Length: 97
Image 1 (cartoon, rainbow, N blue to C red):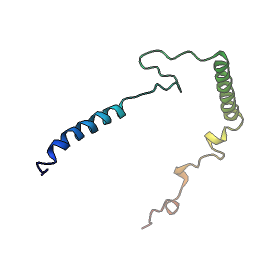
Image 2 (tube, rainbow, N blue to C red; image 1 turned 30 degrees about the vertical axis):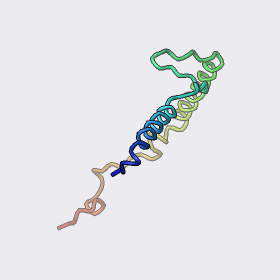
Image 3 (tube, helix red, strand yellow; image 1 turned 180 degrees about the vertical axis):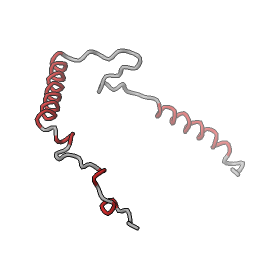
Image 4 (spheres, helix red, strand yellow; image 1 turned 180 degrees about the horizontal axis):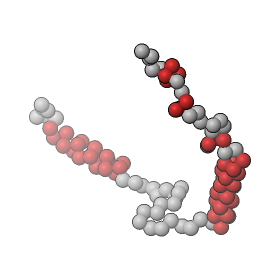
């Protein structure tokens, strides 16, 4: 418990701390480091950015489709898949009676 002599000092001190804490939490400066588009459409990209994005996308699809056509074994496999009906019980690990 706070003694009766300290009580008159505590109230102004507490009010001062609360006032300064609220001031410290409020933003004092506005940063202009990036675009904020809250509920507003962002500004359009420049023409160079749009053309560059199209070129990078086209190069990526060319690379993917080129390699799918010329190296399709990466997707389909290099060797024919074995026919499981030709496997013996020993190969399948089934004990014989």
